[in-house]
Length: 159
Image (cartoon, rainbow, N blue to C red; front, side, top):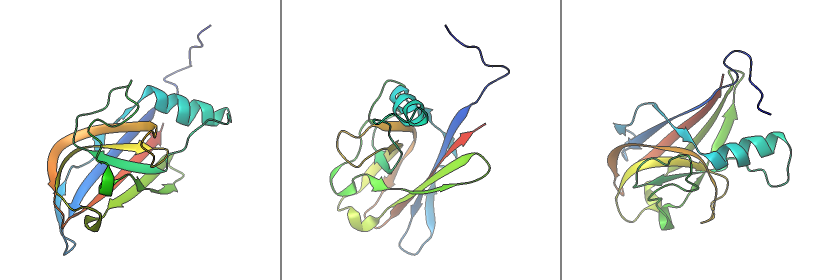
């Protein structure tokens, strides 16, 4: 039996921003705030199982960048995810009383030996190769040079 929520029910939205930072601290590229896609397994593993306190629930702990397009709802990983020396980066998490969880991460230039044309971002549970994607999206491709940090902010909002 399907339950029909009264009114609009709870909505979950994700927004992210990517900035390229030069060695002198100047921001040379900015995606602006963009909306994401929460994948099916993201809802199941990170939200439903966490609320129901099952032992196989997941929590967002890492962020990754990639060179592909946007994930769709059936993806479990980010298309074109950059691995190796630019592996997933552990996030810093903060929560506010405005129903928002904020995840921030910096992909340091010192961790890259080559430049990448980055075009997508995703949130994960672990840094492992088989990590589970929670949400992600794409943006206009930008070259992250070996002398630029990539700063990322990702908000998950409940309304």
